[in-house]
Image (cartoon, rainbow, N blue to C red; front, side, top):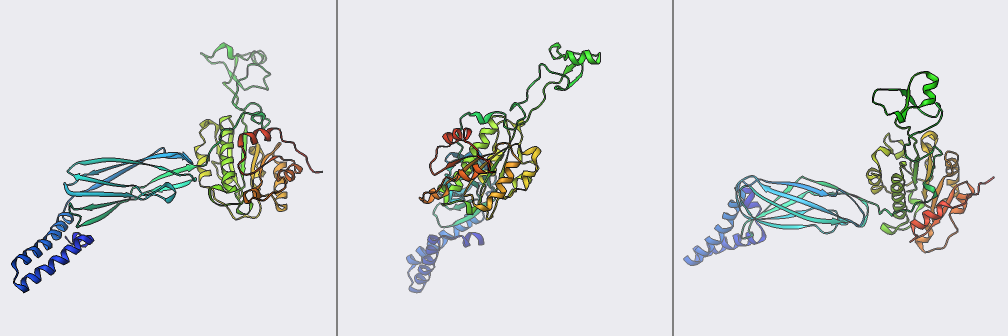
Length: 414
């Protein structure tokens, strides 16, 4: 009862105050009719408070988001299932979900007729033009009586997460899709011929197909030997994203940093679809130190984890690029960098990367173009260091840029 009286709305408080005033004035003036009206105005909000405050309803909420990960500009459906496991409630329930501003306005619903075993399902869509990790919820429920005199607020702690990944542009097949690591094919391949040194063999087992018999090894050992199913040839690629605040220009979704993130997302997706084992490295080198930094090829073209990392990448305040990860030469493989502004302080780091990668590739953003100022070709200085580099300005076509990168020249400094 106390919680019900404490939840009186402005209308309920006004009626209660007016009723008390009319009741005392009617008694003082001897006006029975006025006293009856005052008594009615007092009883109505008090009865509503008792009805709401003493009711034994039990609301529960289940939340689902499908899909949980979407690209920027795409929509996701949020489904809410509300049920009442307690007694019936004479009133209405107004629901308001908490969503970040980037996903739009807060959805509101009004539900009535809360009977025993009452269930309702409502849904709404959310859409964001900016990448990020967003938390949906908690849901606020306001239970009101039929006259709107009392309003009790309850909050559900159920929350859900929505990942909005950068925009991915489909890249064309180019000569860059070949044997980048110098290790051979991009996918595991079976050996049909070759010397014993070229293949892995084992003893023949009952049921092995005769087409797998390696006759040269069998003749040398005197026992029937067969080739193993396949020998994996791995092609690895590291995608470096320069996310330094000082290396980019502009703000928000139209900044050069967001363009660089979208380029990196398109490249890692393209490489994974081509059968590469990919990892993402940022300017501070934090991702490279993780044990699960590599996107394993066994998961196929599923790059959700890499795209999820790119969804939450933020600018870092760092002067130069971290290069501690390049010492892992056995695992680095091919290197593709998406760079912001390159200064003289970066030359040492970029020169070291060249010596730990075979024909590194770079997309150098003309960041001054985001400020409307002309600038020199940022790819020239990279080419002198041995990079195959192309420049990119605002509004550049990434598929065309990818084709240009395949034929970009290099000019090593002496």
